[in-house]
Image 1 (tube, rainbow, N blue to C red):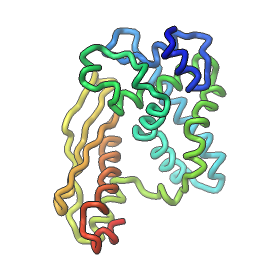
Image 2: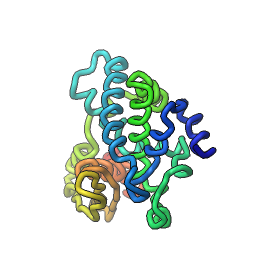
Image 3: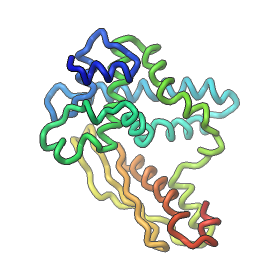
Image 4: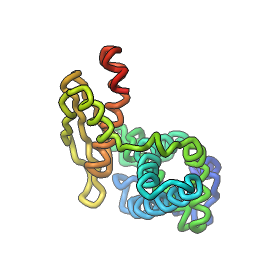
Length: 235
């Protein structure tokens, strides 16, 4: 194992007894046949269960709907991308030359997938408890700071209701691109608010996830791009 992966183990806080799992977790499908998609599949399931367990502990009085909404915000691509950058994953990703030249090491969807693959790799290497400990380190502080009421609505609903309250047309969504094989596609979606001439673009591993992320980005844009007297009613 090279020194970059040795250093990554330190940042992860887990030393692999099966180093091949770590190598595979950071290998994109463009690099070769032994890539991280199966580990990503496993890691996604482990992540959702681990976060569910942490939320169950944190919000003892919240119902299933509230917990589901908070979990959806915590395990979305943006959160996983943030973790990937904190781990310096762009430095260790194994990509084909073409993917690397195209900026693949910085692409949020690729980095998010690698984080899930790492969780799956730790689970296989040391068991579920070790994977939960990993998720707790990465997401524990965010969970502690989370407020169920803050995540009361999904981004698409929130954006639509804010615009309708001002009697403005609802946003439109358009798929710009679909990448990857059928079982591991990435969707690029545009959210447009014609009333203000605004557009926000996001990627997701499903059309719905991409739309939600694009809507969330649009919510961030609105107060910065519209007149103050209107922005106050949109926030």
